[in-house]
Length: 210
Image (cartoon, rainbow, N blue to C red; front, side, top):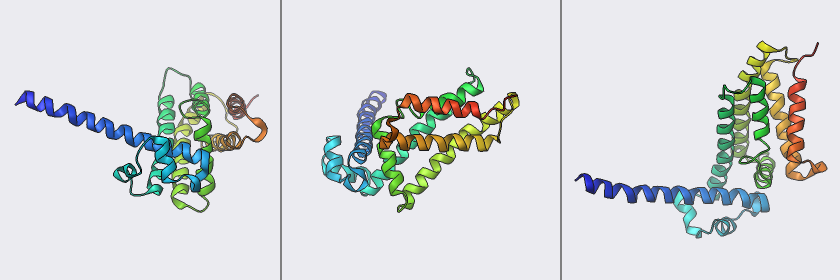
C-alpha cells in the first residue's frame, strides 16, 4: 500500500509542476507581448505563439485574455513586492542600506528589464480607462510604501528626516514610478544605473543636515 502511494504521488507532482510551468509561461509571454504590441495588440494568437502553446491552452488556466493580462500584471507586482519585503527584513543591513536596496531593486534583475518596464507603461496608460488595472497598480504602490515607511520610521530614530516617514516613503515610490516611465519611453536616454543614483540622491535628501 505504501509503495503504491509513492508511485501515485510522483506523477501527480510532475503534473502539478507541468501545469505551473505552462501557466507561468503564459504569464511571461503575456507581459512580453504587451511590451511589444501594447494592450490592444497583445492578441491571444501572439501570446500563445510567444509561449509556444496552443490557443486552447489559455482556456485551461484563464477565462479570457483579460483575466490572463490581469494575472500577469499581478504576478509582476507580487514578485517585486516579495523582493522588497525580503530586503526590508534583512537585519544584517543598516536601515538606510535596506531603503537604498529596495529602491535599487526596482532597476535590477529580476524585477527590471526593458520588457517589464514597457509592459508596466502599457498597463499604466490603459489604467485610465480600465479600473481593474488601476486597482492593481494602486495596490502595488500602497504595498511598496507600506514596506518602506517603517524603515524610514526607524531611520528617523537615528537621523532627522526632512519630512514624515510616510511622506518620505511615498516620495520615493513616486520618483521610482517616474523613472520607470522615463526608462520605458526612452525619454532622456536614462539608464538603470542613473536611476539608482537618482534614488540615492533622493534618499540622502530626505535627511536633515546640520
